[in-house]
Amino acid sequence: MTTYTAITFAPVQGFIEKSRKLRDLYGASLILSYLSQQLVLEAEKTTEVISPALANVHKGMPNRILLKGEFSPTQIQETLLSAWKGILQECRTWIEAKLPEYKYHWEREWTNWGNHTWEFFWGEGDSIQQAMENLETRKLSRGWTAVNWIGESSSLTGTDAIAFPGLGAEDRNPQNMNYGSENKTIKKFYTNLARKLDNCPPDKEPEGKFIAPNEKLSIPELVKRLITLPEIVDLINKARPNNQPLEKLKRFQEIERKQTDTTPGQWTGWFMGDGDKVGDYLKKLAHGNNSDQEIKQFSHKIRDWGEKFSEDFPTNLGRVVYAGGDDFLGIIYSKNPAEPIKPLEAFKWLMTLNDKWKEHQQPINLSVGFVWVAGSVPQRDVLQHCREAEKIAKSLGRDRVTIRIVFNSGQYVQWTCPWGYLDILNKYRDRDKKSNWSHIYQDLAHLSSRRTFKIENTNEAYIVQKSASEFFDIYFPGEGKKLLEDKNDKLAQHLVGFSENDNQIDRAKSTINWITDLIEVGWHLCSNT
Image (cartoon, rainbow, N blue to C red; front, side, top):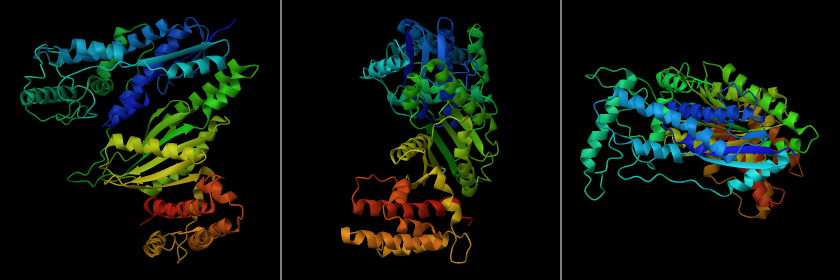
């Protein structure tokens, strides 16, 4: 009887989101794709790989693997850890070779991270469906081991030990440690390391292209930076000559988001997308008579779409960080912070995204979180906003986009809309039949200050909703009228995403909020002024 095997590993999102620089995102993506690819290539030797397709394409390799045949937990562990430890080994030895003046006590700590960074999950069954269900069951039982440490923690996440030569020294006793003296040692080490990475002379301050002198990174965080250095990639590939090579990061330039003496803080657009109910669709294919080939074909088309999406993304708008099949992350930004991308230009691109998604011709819709964010918001917070926005898009009905405008204070406004109705923002006309969003924004502020759209009881629900729809119709001719004439709230339910079980007050409030959120987001994103 045929055996099917399903594999995945973790943490993935956490590994990506622990980032301060764009380089962190790329380094994390390169590592995750490489580890997945090594599992697929090893599995190909003894089994038939059903998904993911395009094993020779390293970038964007998904971390969920489906095989026709047996691939034991021992094989999975050996393959995964061998690839990961190879990366750690070359990064550690490169640092020690470039900075030989230090006495290193950290080998045991690197070994611990080699053994305990990743947790893998494995399931098998007599059918694809059984293997996938068995994998999900096993994922409920976690066996991850934390790495213990003493001293201060990473300045990036604050959860792991700082990587420096004395990390594993036997005389580091918490009872008598001189944290001030150790902090100076750490700072000097990172300054010297930054100089080596930037090819900076000893008498000059490094630019911090890879590592800023004031940073204090954990071992995994440090590796994510170093893996973007072509020299280290060459060492890894040389040490593993019989393996598919790790790809080098090409044409990299860090985003200058924060305000400087010569440029204002740059607003940027971050988009995170994910196919809707892909798991359910794969389960449906798994029940088919030709399930193996159908899933293979699906994986091939989705992977091919991701590769083309990355390659074809307009270089003048930014870049795609990863496109791992049905999920992707990208950034809209200007390489010249003195000439930032205008928000309206970013929105025009967003309008095209769903049509681009449909090019793979698979019956899968798309949910996206799009975040237009001010320059001083930390990158790890931006990624969290992306994740939350995407989840909201899914929770309100899927096949839609949530646009979130995030300010330096951390406050934000957001609006969720089905893809098919997103062009409503282009239908705005002010009282002069032009597109000056200041008019509707000022009117909304005035009405809100008078609590015009506040609902106190059920009797007021229809009246207030009617007032909001009429106000909406003034600036979006015909659109408010559609909401008023829809007696069964079917259009409002589709646009807003409220539940059929919601009462009249909740429906009215949701619809009014959708209208006011549209105006808030439209003013920030689509205004020409």
